[in-house]
Length: 355
Image (cartoon, rainbow, N blue to C red; front, side, top):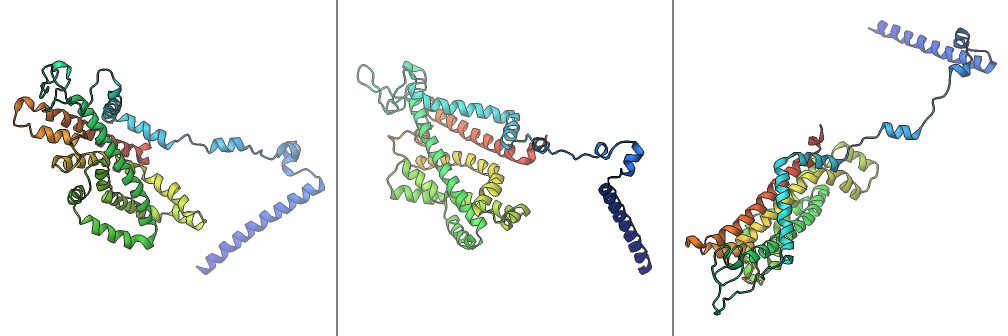
């Protein structure tokens, strides 16, 4: 074996020596002005045979350019999902009509009690009677106006809670997952708060504070961000020590740049899905708290108030429409957000961008 290695080493040394001799001979020939062997064989000069390759920066950029766009690819995949597109159209139309409804002509105030010519309240009118599209409730208020006013209130609560939970959850989740020293503190905080039922917390806060939109938002956001933070923390831990993040830290990249450039873009899909599910969840919690009688006051129209009022009339068949209409609007909003959120989360995953 040793003799075989020596022979291989000798062959390699001989080859290197030959290459070195050929290079030295070529340099001597060029220095003396004599034509090279290739020039003699072809009858051309060295200048014609050999020339430097030019460098074009624009060509180099074009050669390494990719027309891939993350958001363009995400939207392309999303709009291929026809069910999600359908619910997106439904949601856009519902949201648009919810906010332009008060500006339309012949719209009534949701808090106004309507009377007939003799001074009696126009209570429990059937849908379509005397120009009331969805009829009136038991005190003569327009259900059509109250449903859209209640939808605006519930959507405001849902969007506010989702945004607060997202901001707090992302910030605390990144700190929880990236800064190892804070892991114990946030873990113990999560364990304590997670063992407190959110329903019980909502009931206690609603009893302590004055009922209102601010109280509902505060109660829902008080511990709601912890679930988002823990979810973000788990995702950060998975990708925190990958090679490209280790290389960034070795190169001295600032921590905030690593977080915003390397970590959070990877989590766009899961953050979007969590936010899309937080909106109907917050609306559902508002409906539940108001349904049990400790939520928003009666003079604040909301889907919870409308469903609670309709529940009391379920035993009267010809008045059940007062429950069906707000439940239908709530179902459309909840299902639409759920389908759109899941579809967008799938579309935002780069694995689905491959054609």
